[in-house]
Image (cartoon, rainbow, N blue to C red):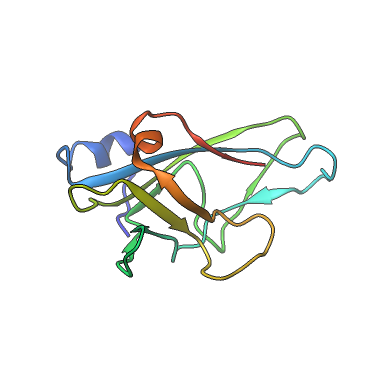
Length: 129
């Protein structure tokens, strides 16, 4: 995983097409919110083109801590916008899986399956509540 001081510093070192960039929005569950609600991402999160076993691991997490570090929400209505960077996908990839923990049904994981690349490329963040 690459460590830089700022996202701008990181972005000056990459060229278009070298990475897959995925934007997310997350927020606490308003109904179950308690003080101390936190979020992070597991460093082993990966993406894979659907129908393959190819796992492309996380390169950089921007604006979200990587476990064991945590981001604590200030209130039940706060939203956290963050971006994950992965290696570039093979040309022609139409759908991907985003997997934080394979085969897990734990609540709160960033597991998304069969996400169309058109959604990723639109710049509209994926949401998890």
